[in-house]
Image 1 (cartoon, rainbow, N blue to C red):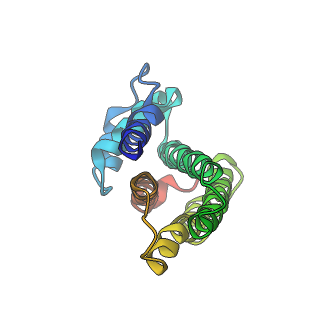
Image 2 (image 1 turned 120 degrees about the vertical axis):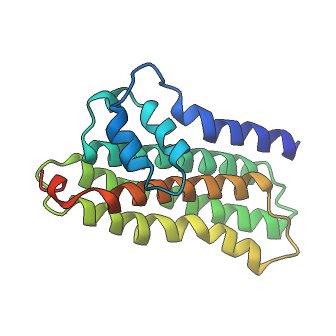
Length: 190
């Protein structure tokens, strides 16, 4: 059962978030920025998957990658919430940790909003710095708390889907940070 769920979540995280492959994005910009990330192929897939990527400037490219990571965070939250709901209360330790994980994943997902607002608002002066700050201090800590909880209770089995999902979101954040940190300063003044 869990291996089937793991396969479904893995496929969802790696393909469904990139389901809009209809419009080709600016390849030179995508290749230039994605090449500087830890996962250039996933980065390019994400950018190709957004219909607005065709006319994307560097700021919009960063926004698209943040949205891909945000989508993956929503999938991890939904899976964890459903797992928590289906865990018997008699299994109190697992039930409680999944309850906490579910709420932490929800906060992580909702915390992406700070980065997306900074990237969407054309009047925002330090949009790059704000987006980096939001991803590193507001999203990542909540995202990783679930894994920390399971490490503190090694007697509880960590569902593989939570591990894979958390790692996928962390990859998405690393891609976004790679884009944001490598946008030339002259392009951040818009």
